[in-house]
Amino acid sequence: MTELTEWAYPLAESLLAEPLPRRWNHCLGVAERARTLALILGEDAELLEAAAVLHDIGYAPDLAKTGFHPLDGARYLRDIANADARVVHLVAHHSCSWMEADARGLREELESEFPRESAELNDALCYCDMNTTPDGTPTNPVDRVNEITGRYGPDSLIGTFIRRAEPEILASTSRVLERVAAAKRQPM
Figure 1 (cartoon, rainbow, N blue to C red):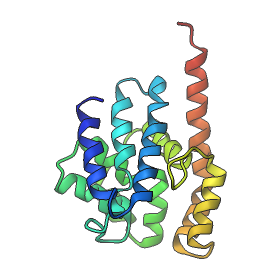
Figure 2: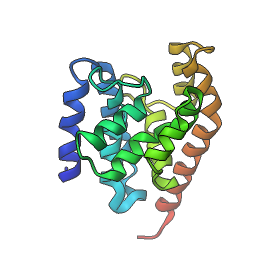
Figure 3: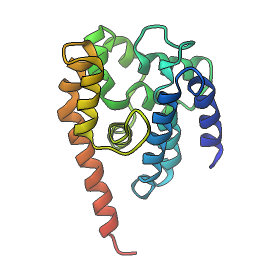
Figure 4: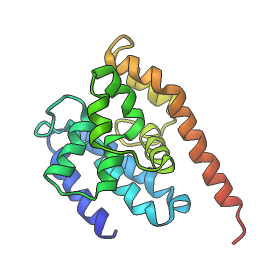
């Protein structure tokens, strides 16, 4: 681990491990997926891993202010934790959050406060999140979307959002896998 991840893991653990152990396990699994993408991320590999372990801190009871975890987590990271701005932006925009923000009437707030990181990093974090179960084990994005829909209900705000986001989640996963495959084809 380097400085950014050495800071991120204990912070995420302190916010999630006790009140939300399953969410903490999910975040550890997402971070594990992030490490598998180091080949395509170069110097941004640590940035992605830090964002991955922190991406769901907005669910922590002490942080949940709006009920929209990407915004709550990003605000905490920016205002209280003085986090690296790029980590904050990735947390704010993880896994098509703009679509959920739109459904909640918070899209303007989200986008005015937090610019998006590069498409490659946003794709990578979405890939990691949507290829990890709530318990932190590997899955695939189709099963993950189905699990989320089943957990929240198909007619709930989250169920509707995740179905609306599914094509983009699948496209993000495809772009990441294409980048990994291309990197593996490169001669040493």
